[in-house]
Length: 329
Image (cartoon, rainbow, N blue to C red; front, side, top):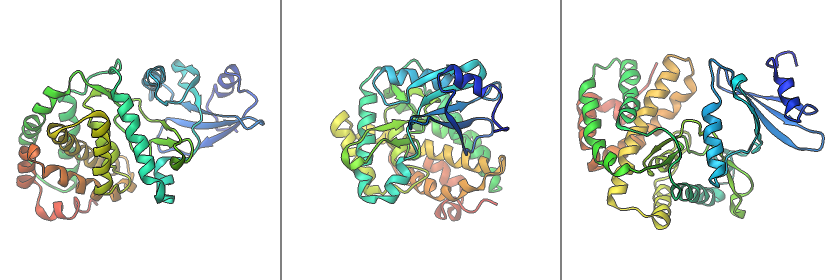
């Protein structure tokens, strides 16, 4: 294959996989590439190329090693050369939770129960050696809505008031967040690999966790249960929150924080999906905005979000809010 990155063959040979067939895997990233290595005996492995200076595999390796050392199901690392951007890992296969449960709806509850139980296990461990999910980070992420969505809709909005509203809404949550738990940040049905049938109690594998921070234990629950990429019914969301509460504990303040983080994350995603279209020319994310917006509106209805809800009422026209964010062209 003439289009293989330079240094690939020497790396896989040094890792003991020099005799494997190399299968490129299509991806959306501009610099990061993935390959499946397949031996004649059926063994497989995943090869990631994240070449510096555009990419840096070190955060992925840092989190992967910590997760594995703490009993979580991250892919095993077979070989690594971070300086050249090479990482060889265990192959979790092709069965993402999203496609599995969409094709087999009867397995949905079992799959989500296992995903909830993994969060319970993660939250029982001391937080990892990662940066804090602090107020500045929450505000910077929420600001993606005013930075990208508002201009795309030709809206003149009160950006200072937006920042102040988030500060007011999130401050009580920040006080309760410490000492914090490891937050994977993108824990949803497209980043959970099924290693067998959920109805048979099969384990699940974690991917795309390189941006982990130390934050609030409700955040990954929001990521999973207010999924931007697939519909999660309000009934399933409530059932899974109840399962988490039964196993890990929660109260009214926890549910208020869940709403706070739901609104914050969904505002961020609206901004990111708008940016992916406006800046990066990726229109496929636009169709997901109404789902994200609907979840954000439910979160904004919670009294804990009153300052942010008031800002939305004053700055985002009703016709856009009622149409799931409106059309971005």
